[in-house]
Image (cartoon, rainbow, N blue to C red; front, side):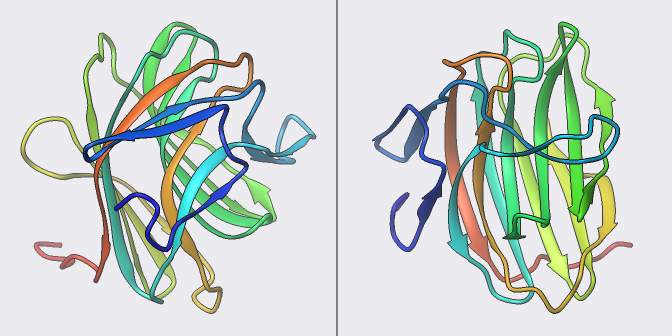
Length: 188
C-alpha cells in the first residue's frame, strides 16, 4: 500500500511499515521553506509522494513524538521546488500548532495553537480548480483550517511529510492514507 506508485522525495533516516502503518524517523535538519522572512531555501524535508489527478483529495492520520523546535509532520502537495503546500502539526516554542505553508516562489506560514495536543490528527488536502482546501480532524468532524490559491495548471504529487529542522530523530506514524477524487465542497 505505502509504496505502490509512491516515491520518496529526500528519503528519511528510516522508513518501515507494520501492517498499514508507515513509521518514519527523520534525518538531521530536513525542512521545506522558501525565502520569506528568513532568507533561506530548504528543500530537504521527507515526503512519500504519489502523482495526483488535477483535482483530488489526499488524507492521512498521523502521530509523532514532537520534542524539538519546528518538528513537523503532515501532508505535502508538490508541483516543483517553488510550488508546494505543506500542512500538519508543527512544534513551536513547546506547543503543537496546526500549520500550513503555501509556497508559490515564496513561502507563507499560518498557524493555530493546539495547547496540550497529544495523540493523532487527521488531515486532508483537497485541490479543486485554483484552490486547495486544508481540513483537519481531532474528533469526528472535519474542520476547515485554510483555503489557499494554487496555480491550476501545475501537475502535482501528494503524500505524507515529516521534517525536523533542528535535529534528527523525529519519529512519526502515518496511517489511513487515501488519495482519490475530491470530497464535496458542501455544505459551504
